[in-house]
Image 1: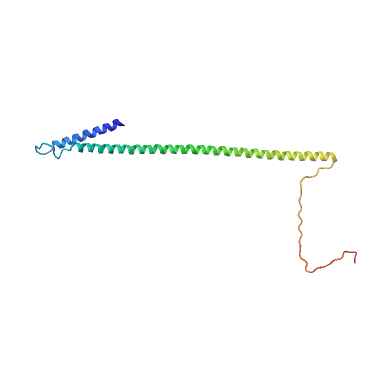
Image 2: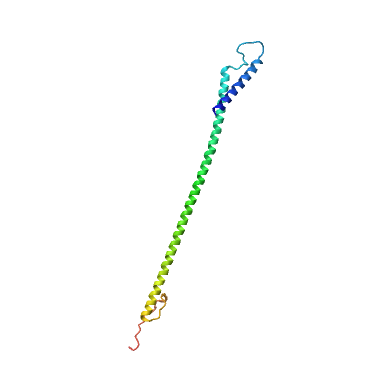
Amino acid sequence: MIGRRLGRGLACCLLSLAVGGTIAGCSSGGESGSGHGEPSAEAIERNEEAEQKKAEAAEIAKDRELLTAVEGKKREESAEINAKRKEAAAAAKAKKREQAAEKAAKAKEAEASARIKKAEEAAKSKGKKGQEPVENTSTTFTTTTTSTTPATTPTTTTPPGQG
């Protein structure tokens, strides 16, 4: 990088000297001394510095652009990694929930099966003791509805046989 800058600076310096030399050769008349067509050493130096600053600014801008691109790519990759990790964690959590639900369902089924078996055994032992037929253990409910209508006139009734 330093060699590139040095090479550019040297090339700029040689170019400005060559241009300055041709301008000096084209000056009119036999005037000698510091003519107006010949750039001074300070002007050449300022031009070189300005060109060097422009080149450095362009290189810095290019470096910033490259750095921004690299950082953007890193952010994108880390976002993908985080998304995959979160997705895997969610899948594992869902699998655990599913396994727990299956386990709970099996436990309920086993409990219900055990209750049915126990009830059947109790019914068999009860049937053997009293030699009574086993009745259905299910409970039936009956619903009766009554309607009440208000009486318009009070009446008294006497029970039969009194009167």
